[in-house]
Amino acid sequence: MSTVESRRRAGLSGLAGLLTAAAGIAVAELLAALTDPAAGPAVAVGGVLVDAAPTPVKEFAVRTFGTADKPVLLGGIAVALAAVAVLVGLLAARRRWFGPGGAALFAIAGAAAAMSRPAAGPAAALPSLLGGAVTGIVLWTLHRPAPRPEGFDRRAFLRAAALVAVAGGAAVVTRRVRGGAATRDREAVRLPAPADPAPPLPAGQDPGFVTANRDFYRVDTALTVPRVDLGAWRLRIHGRVERPRTFTFAELLRRPLVERHITLNCVSNEVGGPYIGTARWLGVPLAPLLREAGIDPGADQVLARSVDGMSIGTPLGTVLDTPDVLLCVGMNGEPLPLEHGFPVRMLTPGVYGYAGACKWLTELELTTFGAVDAYWVARGWAPRGPVKTASRIDRPGAFGRVRAGSVPVAGVAWAQGRGIAAVEVQVDAEPWRRAELLPVPSDVTWVQWRLTWAATPGPHTLRVRAADGTGAVQPERRATPFPDGATGWHTVTVTVDG
Ligand SMILES: Nc1nc2c(c(=O)[nH]1)N[C@H]1C(S)=C(S)[C@@H](COP(=O)(O)O)O[C@H]1N2
Ligand SMILES: [Mo]
Image 1 (cartoon, rainbow, N blue to C red):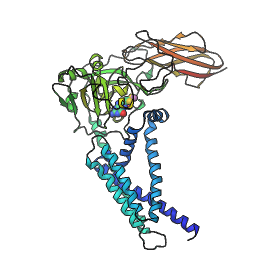
Image 2 (cartoon, rainbow, N blue to C red):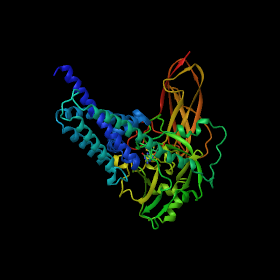
Image 3 (cartoon, helix red, strand yellow):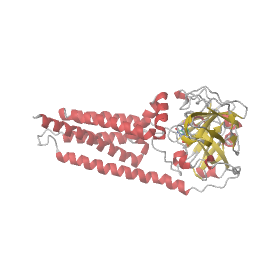
Image 4 (cartoon, rainbow, N blue to C red):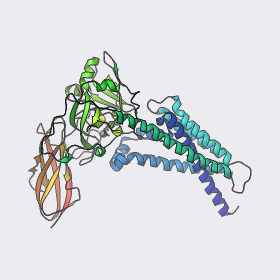
């Protein structure tokens, strides 16, 4: 055989590996879309990797890719899978058994991943096993020993290509249709008026005080947004309570609802980072619900669990003593967006999201910190996550250019629960200057601040620091987010043109 010919055959064998793997995955994803979307091999393997990733890797992913971390991970899996599929194709051309053998290994890995996912039963293995069988059988028939001019069965090749197109297309359509059901459920929700509406925002605020839902940051481990079937959804309160209870969504909506402006932020936010937002939340106060269930005095942790297997533990004392710890059903006048936890999420003012804001909530278990480590705590983050006092310069932007003269400097500062007493800004080595604080509705929101700077030409460095309601000034010392939140003064460098 000529070199050209053997190269051509190797190319075709590699392509056959790729194509048959794609056919298998398409069939697996179609079966998953029809039965249990979480059992699809791509999302299941991705989910296992997310949960298994060491904390520094997760931190790196959130820091580097932000909300795009999920597409980046899924893309990485696809590239790795493609490389192995090509390899299996090449090996199968030499030894026919390598095809089904390689496919079986993949099927087992996908099945194991799917079965290990939260709320998965043995049936979760089926999509991967079926997909593996398809890949194995097609590879086997492709490499029929009968000599053919192309080196393998051309008709089987075309059939595999057709299978990829049909099954893949059907899987995408099925997912869309099923996903659409959650969207329709959400659109059909009519939120009752709050029994206790949010106090009106004081006059004189900047428009950016409330973050629009579409601009609100998103941080979670869910590779695909959980789509909850509202009719089947229940919230269970159990554990160390005298009277365990279960609520439907309609039952929750019948309770008196409270509406508040509350700022939520992520422990992974770097100094100056974007993972913070303020919304007008509508929800059921949690403390009375727990009291009605009869709290066992031995409990000290409220462990929230979600449909996607997340667990988030909040100190029981914080839940009982903080006003307005809510089971949220509404965000800025709408039902919760799917990405932000539809139908119900928890919100604990003054506590970072990882320790107080479980999305897609299904369960609240009263337990102890001694008995259960929640998801992030098991990964080394602090068990309790009180928000640290912080501040950020939003204008001028980092490395921005401004014209000499009067330059507006503005930003936000937050210390939910303690409130912000003062914000100061320093230009280069000049004395610190007090910023003006815009009015706020309560001490659980961020505070907008501003001052005017007489900017002179040249490069300048601006720094900001805040003092909370107790008078404590945020520490200058830089700390990374892990394990209990970043510290340090946000600093930006700007160039002033003459
Ligand atoms: N189910 C679930 N809830 C979750 C998370 C998650 O990964 N899964 N992440 C938490 C974290 S770390 C934060 S900061 C907030 C972010 O809420 P948002 O995405 O609505 O802004 O959700 C919290 N609730
Ligand atoms: Mo977070």
